[in-house]
Length: 517
Image 1 (cartoon, helix red, strand yellow):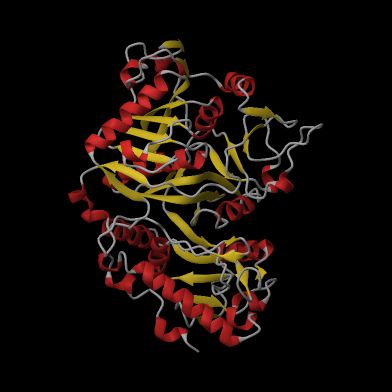
Image 2 (cartoon, one colour):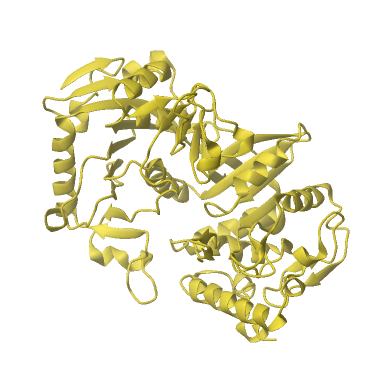
């Protein structure tokens, strides 16, 4: 292949299995990737300087199944009680993976590729060397935004620990590869090889990287979580954790609008006995007003541009993403406060509740959220089973750091989505601030009859009905039916890993018997 740019001459395209008539542009800087992306018709330049791209699905694609090299006999650790593999992970035999890998390399060898040598954090001050080959210049720029670039003078000796191929134009063949496309993630963990194809959505690239690094962290006694972390002026760490689209980044962003707080990480996080750290340096998040319209270096996904002014129209892109560059991965010590954020579209959860450490473990493992889709709520739980060691470590980290835990609902009150009302963001901000300054804990609490956690009786500046879901509903019986249904969903999901957790965590689950009024 024709190769240009700064690289390790002894470990370049051929070392990755590439040989053919294609081209590889190595380690192009941001402005050059801008030029390439625009010249190739992949992106447009906005009036604000941001690069605007279309990744195919305006609302963000669902996670892809992750195919790992392994034989069926190895599936016992990652199966549901019924003996089937989990929704997010499946096994692919060595022979089938090798065919897929060779076909993808043959496809890539005849194309123009953009290669980037980067770093991904696995602990404060520790990295894995990541090499990425992409078919699109904007993908190379986006991944470069998220990761830390090594010093230029070290690239000549760069040897990757992880190699990722991102090939949106490659489509797997169900008969030949045993995988129904169009999109796929396949991984040979032992070789440090990740394959992503059939998708332009950058979220799938993130998914592949985070899953692989998460396995590395698990082996080193660390957890991989999704969230945002901020530090106050005294060095106190606040964590916002939760599923995608739960609102954790918005809450963290609103908090750090206060100059007393600084955002140190937003995205995939590692949490170990040594503290909390960001895996990435940059951020990929929903576009919010506080992001503005981006500047030079920012990538806006699926945001329309005005035909004349080239101004981004954020009002027409409620679910768009922004990829914001960063400088280094942030890290801090033990968490002082933990907010588990959920968007409850069924209108059952209160706006805030205080959790015991065991309840915090239960809700974090459950990973529940239910955003509105087509006007109605759709429940989601964490797709992967969580190993017992992870649950034990999580409980240890919360208890060891004397972490105060809260559940925040950014969803609906007084009825499910489409009938009730959305909890105002201003109310959520007041509740978070009251939890952090200690005034919330100083007030009176009542136990929630369904979930058992403690709910504040009143908070200045917040409507009482937001704290009392039953009172917010026009009909108490309708609320009881909705609560019973949600408790049932939690119980069904928890059955996947109930036997793996401590008895105290099992006791923290909601009870069907008390969900009928």
